[in-house]
Image (tube, rainbow, N blue to C red; front, side):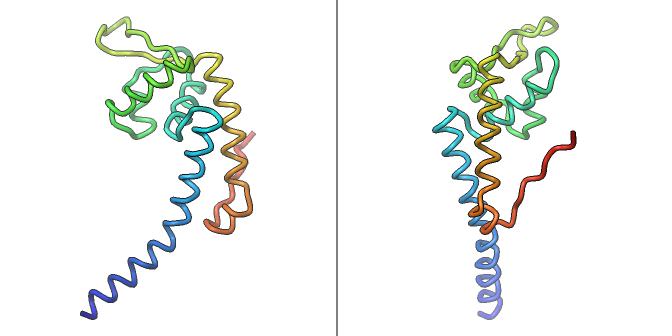
Length: 138
């Protein structure tokens, strides 16, 4: 029974670390969805597309945001319905898709970045997770 108690105690310690992070993550998802019709993965896709020149293959997006192809395809479909990205067939392979960010997508990315930084900079976030965002190098 001692091993089980030790494991249960360790699990409680782990949960004490993870719960605040999960709560902040849930808040980010909620606020991005409410204010910008985005999820965290959608933000990641828009950021990647904005940093690329031209169109980006769907497979590259999957690799960069570490999500499965079916999940990213659904997400791209949602972003396309909202006018944030455009999807087209690849010239070299008619089965593959390439994705580009639209002006509306760039505006959503900018606005959602402000929301994201606002949440991550709040005292509650700092107190519960110990996380403080750093500025990107200029």
